[in-house]
Amino acid sequence: MFLSETSIARGLTSTKAQINQEMTEHSPNLYGICEAYVDADYKLKNLEPSNRSAEISKLMKECNFFTPITHLFWACFLMKIGLINYIPGADINMRARDRLAVYFHLKPRSQKIYEEFRDK
Image (cartoon, rainbow, N blue to C red):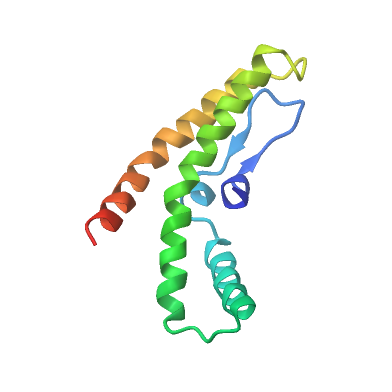
């Protein structure tokens, strides 16, 4: 979820969130986070990695697969708080629509990754 949130800039006074498309599609932090995760996993298990680069690559694909789902989650959450006017003056429904747009924009990438995993 952190990776998908790094591409969103928002403030309570603006009517919508600003979405950085480049960071949405190609997070500059993805490799570093996946590398640290794999290393920490092996350290916790007290094991030596057998194929570290392949595991990092697989984890990166999994992160890219799930990124659109976080935007879908936030769209649903924003629609819910939009109904109760939780933040007066902010167009929460616009933010929800923006999140849905990002979800549908990234969904084909997830479909492609799913097909790659399925066909292995």
